[in-house]
Image 1: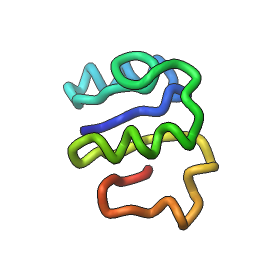
Image 2: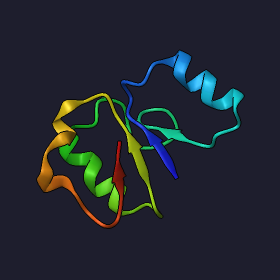
Image 3: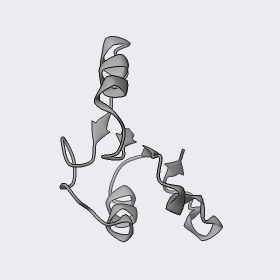
Length: 72
């Protein structure tokens, strides 16, 4: 499952929809608005093979690497 952080622009979401790439976005289809970064990781653990796309540089920490999800 592709998961977009809530900071991904609407224009980017529209492109993905136009290309028929399935995704869910934090605060829209999954999670809630204003989720803290430390709340997103447990959310990803509960999903089946999630790939999380974010512009937030807090997710570039090596200790966040895990076999249950992919961070992009």
